[in-house]
Length: 202
Image (tube, rainbow, N blue to C red; front, top):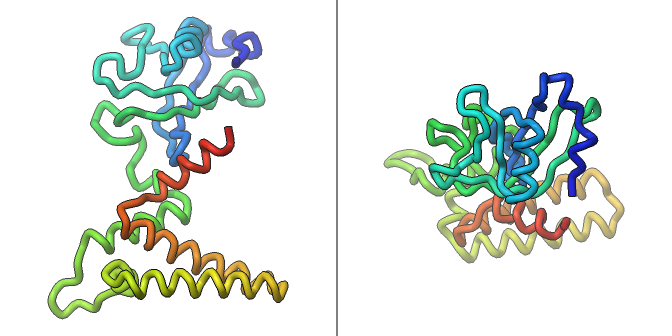
């Protein structure tokens, strides 16, 4: 259980800053404030509560249903800010977006960008006269997709047997790409992989 006594509420006139992050995707959803009462409600109910200047004690999603289930709270080095890892039941922003920050900011890491590109290739078929991308070829050809997946796994294993660090890194990148394409082809997403990994860390 998170110890609220470790926090310094005095610096913010009774408030601490809360940075709320999706525990599965790593996306920063929102930044808000909380006082001791709000965090007590959070710990007791398992759902995020905040303190708003305009609405007072605020149960996130209490009206909309877009609650944020608490995974963990972590204080920063100065004890006046908290990182809240959550599993959201819907958008964090009142505008209906996943995050209160720009959507493209959610794809700041290379894996998310790659997954978004693969999804885009799947959604937007090549137009007449437009060259079909390699990703689109893989998505449209199950045998080719599985063949390449197997080949990249073998090439990675071979590089590791040879002790070739540089080639192993390159083959890992190739394998990750082909694995994400194969996953997307069966309806899976990178966020689902993150969720599995996050669950295994507990």
